[in-house]
Each structure stands twice: as structure tokens, then as C-alpha cells.
Length: 587
Image (cartoon, rainbow, N blue to C red; front, top):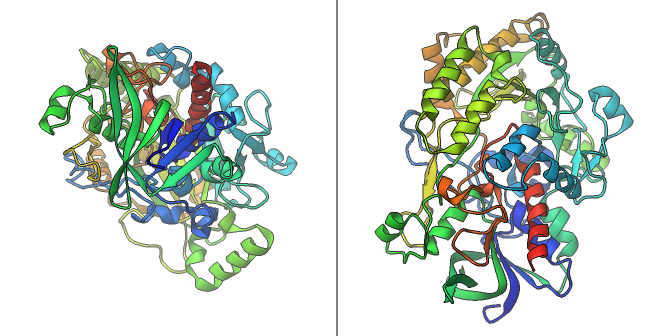
């Protein structure tokens, strides 16, 4: 492998990397090699069974990069684990199989910020190309959702399905939402993400197993002669040459079995290592802020200050309630006998609780719905003060999102279980339902940068969690709205007690303290190699090419310039599908 030249070298076999690799390899005359630091765990049951997917969020494994933030000043000094898949399929192999799509105007914002051609209309064909959406007549009647050929695919690699099992605890929650003015939506995946609707999963409807870029893109193509996957290959840096004043990538250095090797690229090097690792590889290769690179004795090839900055994620706070025993939950799986019965049901009939991730439904709403009286105007004013004089164009666009009644800025994800929050454990025999609250456009911006020239050392991750008080204010309003949900007639009859945060947490300041102590992210990092104009802190142009280079592109979530109201996995697939066409057109 070390002496072989390929047309394209793709660094990272994750969600985006396997999409772009297999699409480029559709041309039998094109050779593609993919370097992946992790291993291929595609056939292991603990990564395939949806009901076990949340186990990957209990703590780092060998399929995880083991990223921890630096101590977060505004989160009680906590160093927070933020999982990232180090495995073929990336986070699509280790996440909780949730799919989503944001609001059309959020995608249109990419183009408004300077990424010409990147908008909802142009992404829809690639959402469709990436997926096969399967919905039965019974599911359609129950949820109100339908297969709409304008927005959904019927022959793409990734399976999109509805859960085969759903707790009846969704019934009082739905009635509660309606009582509070949150409407049920039949088109939450069609460019209008407002309202509450059933979760959709990346699960094969026939096998009831995870559908990912590893299983759906790579596995059917793994025997192609022109597509090579090299696992256990840790990229160290991109090798460049100066050709008539142009910076041309000629290959990639990587560690394999402790030895530093080089693989050559004839046409392009494509970085697809995600929002945390992509900035590191660029900086190790001499592309980044000049001062930072000089501090770590990395020769500066391109002074590009945007690398590793503008980091955005979805910030969360939990709510857990004990519910009446008539409402089912996954907590019953803590009983070995019940777990055994469910495993048999899954194995024999592909039914039951193990066919789903435990999440039941989403509810997305704008602050015009969930803020208490007067809070919206205060938030608008605070947002205006944040963006006053800032050079960050994405923050300015967020201020427009905040004032819109159509664009959600808060998510309630309902889980039929006791979510681990650090506040106790489920009591035997009791049933729970939990809500993961997430603000969708936080104003705090983080960063990730190298701390040495050692390619095997992790970079320093700083989320700057709750750097802006407005992010805390929005989560406080979310928890207060969640308590209003618990006070609706339907929920009063179903809920026995609020467990987390608990009735002792009352005032706004007490809720803020709770969030500082228990708040996390939803592990949706983006924007560290933003697709923005270079003068606005951009790292790649609209063709995903790294500024200052001739033939290096980035294809992963790091190019997405501004966050949106959805779990991002579907969007990453669509971005990679479009990227493949852009690369093919340039060949």
C-alpha cells in the first residue's frame, strides 16, 4: 500500500467518507483508497441491534476517539466526554440511529452566508439519493406521515424507517403538547421541522438492524478492485508540493502498526475525519492560524485562521419523570428475565423493544411557543447585543432565526426510559419517561486545536459551554415549559413525580445551576472547517476545496457553517452525496 498511487485518497471511513468513496469508485477506471484509524466492526451485534445503540453513550470504548473537553468554566469546571466514532462508519456506527432533517430556511442560510449552490432545493435530491424511506399503511395512519416522493427517496442505500415499537407514554405527551399549542406535524422531515412527530430511524425494516455508511455503502462495494479500505491507519499529515506557486497535495502520511508510511494521491486528497479530527489534520499539515502553527513548530503552508474555530453543537438539559405502570418503558430491560424475552422476540420475529433506540418522538418549537411572557423580547435584545460588532456572520444569521416563528430553536426528545443524568438510577419495577431538551442554535462558539505536532495526541477541545448567558436562559425556559407540560390534564394523570431536576429545583437561578452541573451536548459538532468566504473565517469554498490548496477537499460535518434544527446524520449523507458529484464533475 505504501508504494501505491490512487486517484483519490480519502482520510476517514465515517458517515461522509464511505459515501464519497463508494460514489467515486462507481467509475471502474477511478481508484480510491480510504484510510481509517479504527477498525471494521460492521458485523458485531452490539453495533447492529438498535436497542443496544445507546450503550455506546455510557462511556468511551475502543470504537471511540475518547475526546474530553478542557474544563468548562461555565459548567462547574467539568471536563465533558464527547463521543466520536473511531470505526468504519464513524458515528453512524456508534450513534443512536436517529435521523432528522432541518428547516428549509436553515439550509438556505448556507448559501446566504456565501456557499453558493448550497440550499434546501439543491440538497433535496441528495437527501433522496441517500435513502430508502419505508412506511407501512398502518404507520402512516398512526403518525399522519406519508411517503412524499418530492422529499423522500425509494432506492437509496440508507434505510429510513419508523420505530417498530413505541411506548404508549407518547399518548399523554402528545395530548399535553396539543394543550400547550404545539401541533402534530405530518411533514417534519420535508423542510418544516416545527411541531411534534414520530422519530425516524436508520434501521433496515427487514433485518431490524442498523443502517449506516458501513453497512449500506461500503459492504455492498467492499469487493471492488478499485476501492481499498485500510483500517488501523492513523493519518499524520497531508504531503504537499509547490508546483508553479500552487500548493498541491501528493499524498498522506499515516501510522500503521507503529510505522510511518505514505500513500500517494494522483488527483485529490479528501478529508472526511469529522468536526474534531479534520481541523487537527489540517493544522498538522501546515494549514491553520499562523501563530498557532509556529507555536508548535509546524511549518506554515497556508495561514487560515478559521481552521478549528466556529465550533457549534446542540446544548442539552435533561428532565426525567416517573410514570404510572400502565405506561411501558425500556426500564423493564433491567430485569434479566424481561431482557431475555425481548432478545428472543427480536431474534425470532424482529419485533419488540430492541428494534428501536428508546426514543419515541421529537417536538421542535420556536421561542414564540415555549418562552414565558416577555422572555422572547429579552432574548432578542440579548442576541442583538451579542452580534453587535462581531465579525462572525453565523451569529448574525442566528439572530434572524431567533426572531422567526417558523424556525425551531428548542427540541424535546422523548425517551421511554430513565436517561442517565448523574442524578440517581431507576428504581426496580418503576417506569419512567425522559426528555432531552436541546437548544438548536447556541450562541457560544467553541474551538479545537492542536497542542503539539504529535499526530497521535488528541487536540484540545473547548466547547466554551454556556459562554453566553442566553444559552442558559433558553434552556431554563425549556425546563419551565416542560413543567407546564407536566401540569396539563393528560400528563397529570400519567406522571407520578418529577425526578430530574426535581421539585427542589425551583427558581431560574436554581435551574441554571442544575444545567451547569448536568448539561451536556447532543454530540452534534459542526463548523470547524466552515464553508464560508475566507474573509469570514471560512476554511473551504463552495466546492469544499480548502482555501490555498489546489486539490484538497473536506467532506464531513465540519464544513456545515451554521447549525440547524435536526439530528444531523441525514444531512451529512446528503452533503457527501452532493460532494461526490462536485468531485466527479471536476475530474
